[in-house]
Length: 51
Length: 239
Length: 219
Image (cartoon, rainbow over all chains, first blue to last red; front, side, top):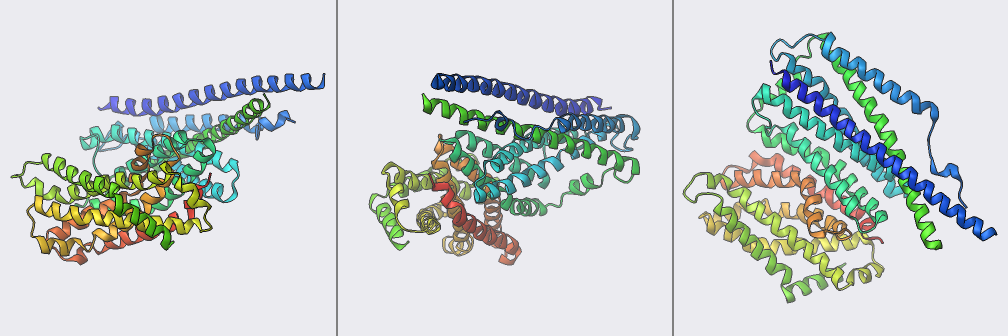
């Protein structure tokens, strides 16, 4: 009886956590990519200066 | 000018493997207890099992709110951006767990109390808390400059924690005029059985570990964000 | 400190800008909220304390936003901050100004409320004078701090109520509950705990504001 409520409660929790983790990992990956790009830019500039 | 190690603070490979492993393991144990080991509640039936996960949301929520307050205070005092990262991360996770706690509470209340929502003091307090967190994150994102946003958010973070006790008293007195049976019912429900108590403890532990692990990841993302901002600024000002 | 006080109050009294809008908005809210309840229905009486406070809160929030916005529009604020005064003192002065403005507006709003709800005039005034100023102190304290905070954000007008009202929950619950009991003519000691709560709230937020205001206004 009322099993759908039990299911709904657990589904809400797991979907909520999952969506958060996915969005966090996406944010992390995007930031890492940005960081790589920026590093490359800085490095290129430094090389240009020393040349 | 730049050292590569600067960008990745506190990435300890050992903890990076151990932490998720511990979370998954404790979560599986908790799920086993919640769904298989623990007996059905005599009055509420299987729906009572929602309770384990519902109650488990509050420890992270209140811990998060406390962390936001302390970290905000330390940020205002020491001006160290790391405290600000902890505060943002904590507020975001607090809002997540608070939302999930409210949602599971409503889903439990519908079959048991026959209504999704009552103005029970705990619910009211939680909703106020939720509003404060949500405003905290909004304030940060709408500040005219991010540095100032951290400071403004910190003021709200400190005020929120200071206010917590007063809000708590107020909502209890507010409903106190019509004594709420539901409060005692909620607190005392089903905890006589030692198996149930064990299940609850395991479940709380599992979700608290999940919270700590997510907090760690979120703080690291904040560090990264800071580093990217700094580099971008450097590149732009050099250009 | 006295100089800031005088300057602000003088400007306000001369232009009557915030004050007029504050008062008109409060009246409008009293009117609109009265529409929500059938005048002949007993529900209206039990809703009266809530209506009074919603009118005060919302008109007050908007009115207080004005006082700091004006400083900003005229760029007075940076001048004020350059002056060799402690920021905490600036905060206290601003709070006193806001308290005065709110009180003046209430001086008009409360009689209007009594008039609309057909309550005994002097008796109601005597009852309400116990709680209204005490609540207004807390309201001014928290609104002054957070209007300085919301000033530095985009969407300023929205930020102030969003940030302030959840924090002010205890204050307004206390005000509504106490007003309900007082309007019913019941003894005051029945709501003594609410008075304590309001007083504690006032002190707590005056201290928090006094200590953190400098961070809110620093560039």
